[in-house]
Length: 150
Image (cartoon, rainbow, N blue to C red; front, side, top):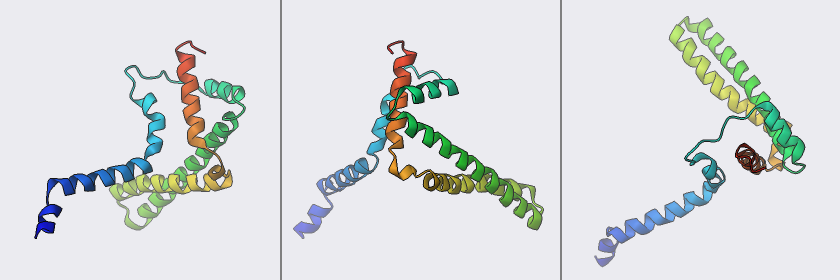
């Protein structure tokens, strides 16, 4: 009986929550890389393609990784376009429903982006590269450059 009272006590739930909190904080630790860029009082200014190319040329370690990661986006865009057009065309062909075709267009774009991005990951072997760190290093470089410290 004492065991049941202990299981329903606030300490049980607090310990349970702390366990899950630790579990998920380990799984989503990569979000800490971006927190200093996202949680700013003044947002970073927009950058252009020439700024990205300047970083790629200036950083021999993370520059090529960032270039490869940016090339993978083309696969996602192509997959998104193919998925959106093909699924909406099929929906229109068989249902002649505008709202069905529009929903199929949106869903096909999302599914196509996901599939195209996976194809790009394998085609360019992004699983061997640390793209997250390369993007964080670019953000650090851009922060320094935009504030005139670089």
